[in-house]
View 1 (cartoon, rainbow, N blue to C red):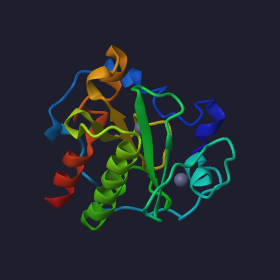
View 2: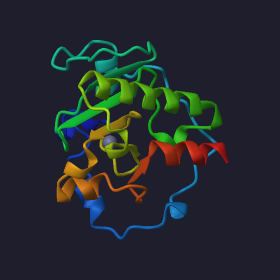
View 3: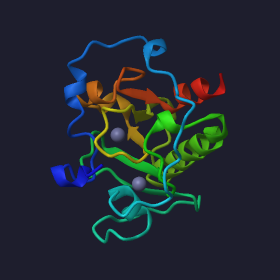
View 4: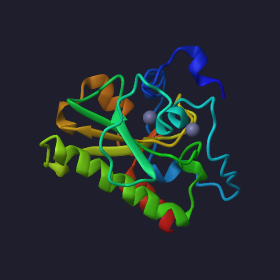
Length: 181
Ligand SMILES: [Zn+2]
Ligand SMILES: [Zn+2]
């Protein structure tokens, strides 16, 4: 995966509106989490989020994060007044590589997402969208949680790109439920 060569930068949103043109399906139709999960190498120097997590990308300011397994930073192309990414330091290509064992990881990512919103004086969590892009609709192949708020201020295009439980975007709650079963 040489995603940085196509100039997408650190935002994974740029190529994703293409996905929005496709019809939405019910969440049950999204591909199942596969069992054979190559939990890839812990670090890939070619992966922009691995480099950020390892403090090797001076252009990205890491925000305070109370969980040492995760990092948090602003999305380079914000879709809402608050738009943060919570990223595990360990490299997972996307949420299809996650299993039951990873529920705690996802819950921790959500906790960090809420904490970062609180630190930025946003506490209306009912008006927050947190979720993951589903492969192949994500240009950065390193698991990341989008934290968007206020959800009711998303633009028309962003509503599509971050559409709840569509083919291309699933909420953290939905992913946790799916991993449980
Ligand atoms: Zn990575
Ligand atoms: Zn994404």
